[in-house]
Image (cartoon, rainbow, N blue to C red; front, side, top):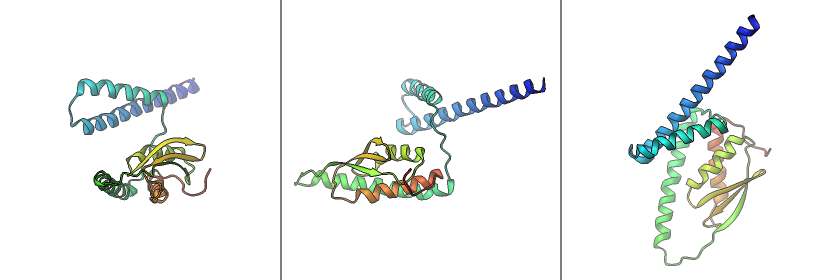
Length: 174
């Protein structure tokens, strides 16, 4: 009888955690929608939020535990890269020589943690001139606008910042 009560208690705790997880995902998607849409378009936003929340529940992406002490440096780095990227795009749009040095390149991951790898592939597209296309084993396939630039150190720096933010180990490929 005590074992049955213990199982019920454990099941109710797990169900409570699931509800909290769903509510947190709904909150995250609501904040994202609010920021992206300036608080408008809720007739589209509510179904999108519900769909995204449902998919997050079904697919159960790894929970993201941030190390808040690293958040300010991550934001500062990321915003600085955004500004540089904007200036780079503006400069390229005014150049007469439109020669292209775009290329597909492989970046070898240095962090073995899956959440860092997925985060890197998602965030790299927001850096200047890069787009993460596919994770291939221990490498990320990236499209770069100019292979002559130092894209590798930019990606490595982003990976380090992300690894610190997520509290995952650095160094050594898995």
